[in-house]
Figure (cartoon, rainbow, N blue to C red):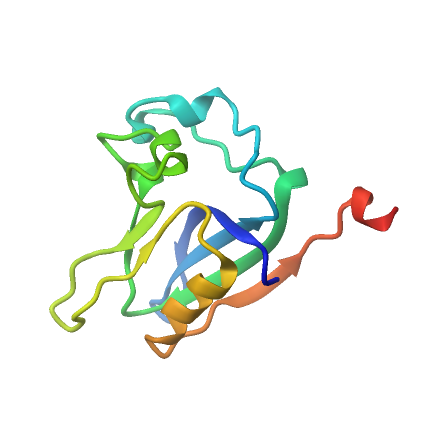
Length: 138
């Protein structure tokens, strides 16, 4: 888990408790074939696909009633490839008067860093899947 890197944040629905959920996808490498839709500008106008499943190493879920994120996939100004080039973050917390520091997640950020930021808010990112690919078995 220590060398997995953030490559995508997918918004999930609110649950019955009113918690907003986000799916964090992590990969071992940033050399991923994302497809042409990652260059569509703005990202919100495209039909964006997450990284290929063969590239995903781990999936984590964040559920919270008080952390709401803006995501690059909903951008009206930037493409998702702008995240890859670190022009913008892949996700960031909406402004909140209750917090001095906003959560910001960068493309390629380590799992440990993401986990630490979320933990600082007394939340956890629940690992729901560690993917075993065929090439790992050899």
